[in-house]
Image (cartoon, rainbow, N blue to C red; front, side):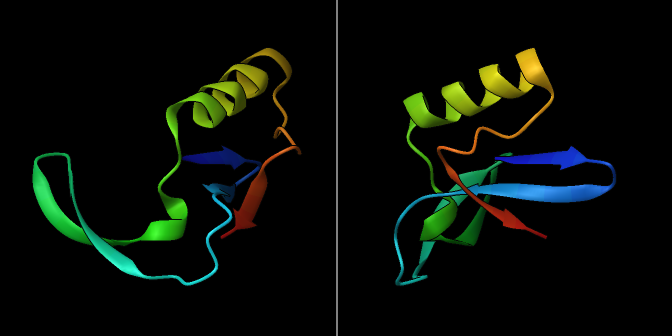
Amino acid sequence: MSITIDDTIYTLMNDKQDNCEIPLVVGGQLGNYCDNICIELIPMLEAIKYFYETGKLLELHKWKQE
């Protein structure tokens, strides 16, 4: 999940440190994605809700600035 604030992209990350690629179907197409951007549903929903309500990133979670 990514959020853009003032032309800066922030990507929600999980705690995995190994940066392994996994095959994943996104938008109907198979691609290889880094496993540290695969987020469980509840943390992702928390981050979305917080951003919707405040316009800010939920700092409880790890974000990567692109």
